Image: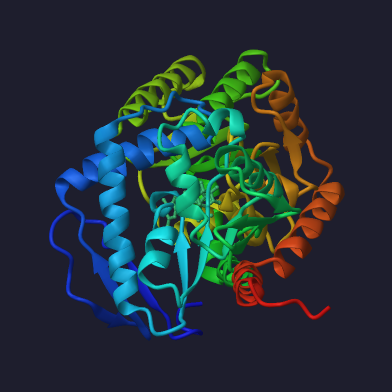
Length: 427
Ligand code: GDG
């Protein structure tokens, strides 16, 4: 998308300390912004990932509120706004991404009123009742209203925001258009997606198919491989799914070694307290399952706290008979879409939480409420015993959806709408 538009990327390199000098790579200009160790702790791990992330995900873990973190969030947002204001050409379009930068739209508009500003939130936008807990609630709403177009994963998030702008700032609105300081701001849903074709092609490569067979053999050629792939995050419902699996084994509705579970849990936000305690809980549960149901040389669950290459992930998707995606709340969940795209053979079955944004599009998955353990267990059993013809029909229908609604469709629909917002309509 940046290449297509000859765009410039302004972002953080991922390492604390001075920013690398701007450089070009693959036809894109990159302008790194520096974050110090303090910023990392207060802005990134603190306000972004211990306040906003849990609050926006239904407070499934309690959010922490800190004035110091909020101050750091302000300062870092200023830094990004300053950097973008410097590099943007006259009348350029700037697309600000995600919850770490919600103050940037207004800060940028102050500096550069000539710009067209879009904002996209990758995570859910919470209901008013929850958002109102945030001490910086009015500041964040004002920050976002600096944009011309605010994109959300789901309609519900957009509606929550429109009502909130009215509730907190008294903004008038009509449908999804908010009036603020003499401007009209649109809030709408743009469900994100994947590069479907790229993943389909990757998973069809002979080398990936061979690797998938090899993985099956390494796991002892079980009848059913159940797979989970997530960042190790408490929103992803990893504990629910392990518990469901343990109960199914204990009730002998599933058995080892006919069934094997593989859980990839990519390391994430490891210095944040919530994540450290989650890791302890998940690893305890994995130990318990293997202790009770494993045998020498046979694990009931293979737990992999590691990052994998995209190719290895594609092979894992291709090898898995049942994919379990059970977030308690998730903006979209790309893993669910990647699994569907990887099954060009139309094999496999997807168990998907109703609380993932992806559930609105992947209607032919086995949808379930992960809080309802019995329903989750039934969905796993249904997936395990799925009639192959029915499985193929479901998979093909989901593939049609994501072929049309891929990531290019997402970015084009957002940017096309951004072009036309604020312009007088034809009628
Ligand atoms: C946020 C929102 C929204 C995972 N492990 C490895 C690896 N991954 C890749 C997956 C997938 C991505 O990371 C994870 O995306 P998700 O969408 O599942 O989840 P979040 O990280 O929480 O993303 C989410 C998303 O933003 C986009 O808007 O869908 O709701 O929370 O692509 O494949 N990739 C590699 N190795 C791994 O070990 N290479």
